[in-house]
Length: 241
Image 1 (cartoon, helix red, strand yellow):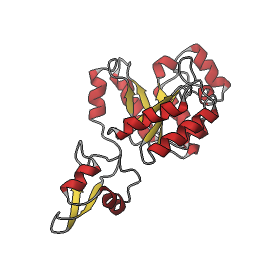
Image 2 (spheres, helix red, strand yellow):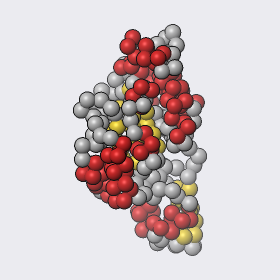
Image 3 (tube, helix red, strand yellow):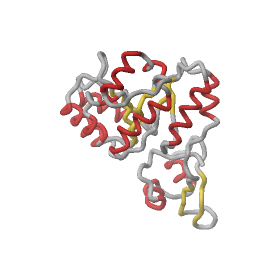
């Protein structure tokens, strides 16, 4: 999201969701070649995206270093977001320059440097007051899977339901296996369905690849009825199980 043409960018994002994506990540970073727009541009983007996709699941992904967050129109983007995904790149951020900047902004790193635990703790302190779920993004270019395990543990400890990784192509197979074996920290979700199931009503457990549209068709009901019956906030966002 550069902000150079917010209406065009909003329509592109809406098109992704309208073509079947269950969610979309907005990568918003105040670096050269990334975000250049103003707060007004961000507001324009948000209004257009939500006009076109009022129920689409939007995840705001940011560089979580405090001095970077301060350069972003956070209020405008968070207003249209369902979750925030801080990019926790502990190996990239573990430099002397970053170490000094963390001290300057009131978040001194521990003697071990910029660790996964430290980044998660800082993001939790800065982002939790905004009131959105925080789902951390781990550094895929990590040669030690135990490091990523520590990252998952620290994210879980501050009530993140799941983590993800950037990016395919640099992430070790061991980390993908670790992610596969670490399911989201959520209670089981059962979809109540009215219709021919069990003679007029029943329960269906969400399976991989399911959508509400497919479940509705299978059970002789509608998406709107499933949303109402199950008090779902977002028809595009289901959890397996």
